[in-house]
Image (cartoon, rainbow, N blue to C red; front, side):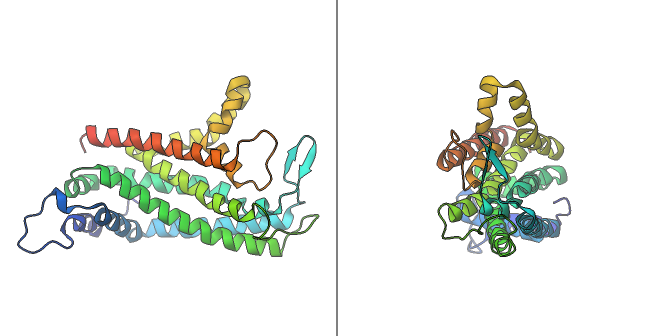
Length: 284
């Protein structure tokens, strides 16, 4: 994201100029959310490193899913001493890897503008500021979801074709499989949007990514170590909620995928609310 050029700034200002008559005096009411989204999309696809990162993420998701399917014994999850047979979950395992990469991309979409000073151009073109945050979240979500759906479909079909488990492979028509595949795409997408929220709140790349990593990987271990009510609270963390969404076969007592999705939406809502306050009250 740090390689953004002057054309990126031009793309931002086009959000307030596109479609305006030549003699018309531009004002804030000319800046619509649709135009800001188009501007942010131009920014995203103009940065080669972002496109390469998305491509490498897709490749990693496919490779991981196929490899785990080949090496699987068909029972990756244990519950009450017995193996749970989940061949579809093996092919979708790459979503776990993608969450961190896409979260970092989401954070960089906004923190890179603060580091380069481009944010001043962006907020000059969009004075109300809130559409900027919404547009970034929408564009990141669309790019992440498209990447995940495409890569997970390939991982699933190839993974099941070479499946090495002790039983039959899975099919999209099997109960819960299509839902799990869509959930596996939604989970890293939600983390990517959370990254945008962390970026808006913290403004600093290392701090935003550090907080994201802590929420995904450090805090769950800490809560499990503490046990008791803290251990039970672990399932309401974004990483654990996402894993619950992906699983085709759930352990007894786990929250439902619908509740897990609401947990992720709640995290996004809180972060975007905090990011909105920070964006409105702080100077660029």
